[in-house]
Image 1: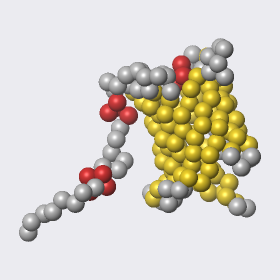
Image 2: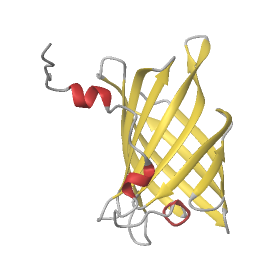
Image 3: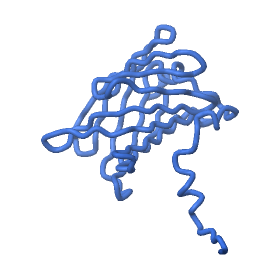
Image 4: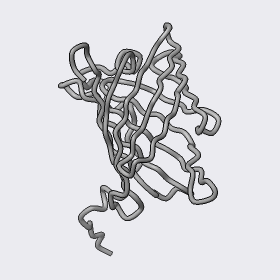
Length: 177
């Protein structure tokens, strides 16, 4: 029997196989304690199950650190006028590992940074209608040469992709805004 290769099957079977350590030699080096220190602005979009953009947002953040312990406050403004906020409490361990908690995160997030990247995995509670839904998040961050931090977050439920968030962030320096 002759095996046939169909275009795209490599992509299909490579899903979920990337590791933050794949980016160990990539520059510039990302240290979330540095990037998430002080004021930050950003914008992004949520793409639903069918890959359609269903929501846009802008975000302002402010981070403060004492050694390896940090607090990052986020304020969201959605295109439909809704506003939201979240406060992350982060704690860095050894070899780039960290944990993070927030009011809408189940238990805690676990993360690792290496090279120009960081990956954080967690379960988050999302309001939906009169109730709520818990989804798993795979939150990737990549630091670009121009200082922009790119975020790609994959949301899954029962192992199936239900949405994706793509966002970018930049540090606000004195005199910019």
